[in-house]
Length: 426
Image 1 (cartoon, helix red, strand yellow):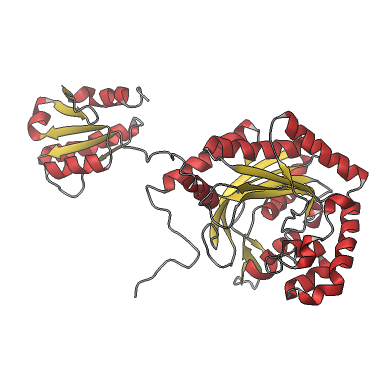
Image 2 (tube, rainbow, N blue to C red):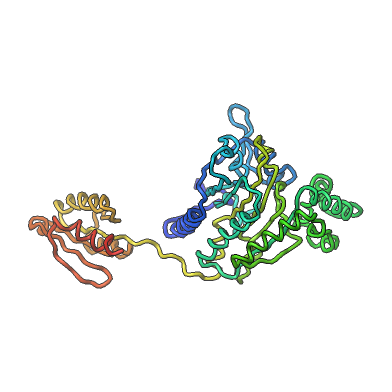
């Protein structure tokens, strides 16, 4: 019986994984420039963390989590998102007491959600995210937005749109919540069971329903921007003002809501507008949150963050036919001819690698012609040929594959020669 990969997962093979590495390194470099530091949290956590941190009215908690009992009969869950785990670590390790504040963190790694697999939406996906904890300043909202927009720009993404909204403070949200209840309650029986359950618990989530998005009441539902108090309105204007100052364009959409319960004030999504991207156009989502740190046992602490899946970034790059980074080439392939030469190539390849040079050799006893073909397939910049005769004379032949130029050099100078031609020439 052939065992196949589980549905909703994928193998990322050589030749493709380099693009993932490129995106991840770009993201890490941007974070370094913005003074954000990496954090790594466990792949599974106690289920209660996500029930409390993500919100028990969300689709993630109600329908999508991979939850299991361990041998100690404890309920554990594969992480469906990154924020709750980062905040748990922030509280547990008392990062709020460190002298450098706010605490600015980034993470990357696999997340797990049980949902119908489709293009750009997997059951195991790789998420990159940022969290800034400890500041009420709207300038840090603008900083977080600038970080992710700069990343997309440096990756070469075009036709992307930053969409903003404000969910207001607690007072504003309460006023809007009551207006939503009053709006939907008379006809709530016409909505799906999820929306009916959310009416009293979290009516804002009704606006995010995919089943009832075409219902007439959705089109004229009360907009949060109409219920912002003066403080919330001023905050939102400050965020927009900072974005204007640094030249980041945006669109305000009063219907934008986020799927998690802990958001307030700034909420945002980044959309792909190019052709060929498919129906799911959201590249990134995030916003400001409050109450999450307290829910997990820490002091009252505001935060703001975003997350995106690397799969969707790759989709966007391919959809716009962006020129992607080439697969790295091999610096040197060492061809051997004869038993003594074959033994010597083991030593030479080791010394090349030790000197920082990417190198390889034949391990299948191929003929000389087949070894040259292998060097071509690996796109080796140089091919070194060592036969028993050359070995006895202390010589080795080196061919630069791009030009075809061949040079015979002393074997003792071989490592330094290749090092100068590759590392010295990069």
